Length: 333
Ligand code: 1CP
Image (cartoon, rainbow, N blue to C red):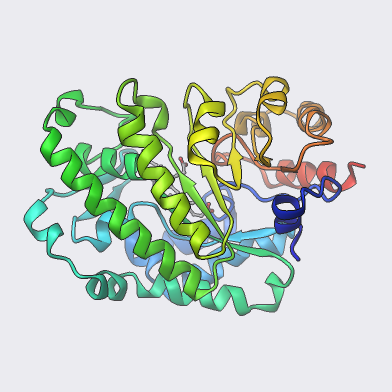
């Protein structure tokens, strides 16, 4: 059994497993080298051999306990036929949303479009370097995908609140998103994913209707993953009440963000916990990094805990800081 599965299933607290959100990405010089030659990000995600290579890069360097497939949560709208582009400095830019077209996309059509992702999961799960490691498949949560599809760009840049006023459109779209997220999850598991993480990066944006837009659709996905006999990790970034979320959604593990007080949550939540460390700590110095890392390890010493960050690793992070982080965790007894 892998260290992460042992932590989740047997509540083993001795192994201190680690992986890092966005571990396959821009802070790695070997990724930047590939990226420079491949300007179309979506094409890169759909290049089976390059996405396999990028996924393995952080494993070779840091021997993490899990490989997370190099892809993006926005491959879902892409698979549904909505245009998705990434522009330097602006982030994702989505095209017109045509509900009539999206409604008529078939499961086969969708699966065929995203097939290189599944092929690369299969490559990774059979690679010997991933022996005794998990292969993490992932999706965006329905709410976060809805936000991108309707807002057509990052809500960080600009969020038009009025867009959610059209309740009929929102509900219809949400149910289509949910249907295809289930298909995408199932395809990833069939290809060899041993864990699924659901990223709800914009959970913190929603003030009302949390039950309808976050809790219920996420619970449906969680139940779907559980039926396929694979553990599921949820990351409702910025949500106010992690305890209520966990009580309702019941993931096998929850990733906390860096604004969550670890001392408080460890007493409130019984399920395994992942993450928490502020990625900005990796931009400071080794001494501070060491201190902050030990703080999390100490607090979660007797709680099933997988080390990770409280959000994705920042592109400007130095390799030696990641090395220091891994050394601290591996050396903690
Ligand atoms: O080089 C580049 O410009 C591309 C940068 C990049 C990378 C490396 C993007 C664009 N996506 C990715 C890969 C990616 N995205 C992974 C790969 C595996 C890994 O190493 O973890 C994963 C898991 C994601 C997930 C993702 N994409 C999320 C959820 C996690 C989070 O950070 O909150 C979100 C919100 C996205 C959307 C997205 N894709 C890319 C960017 C820059 C963004 C965020 C835009 C925004 O702020 O709204």
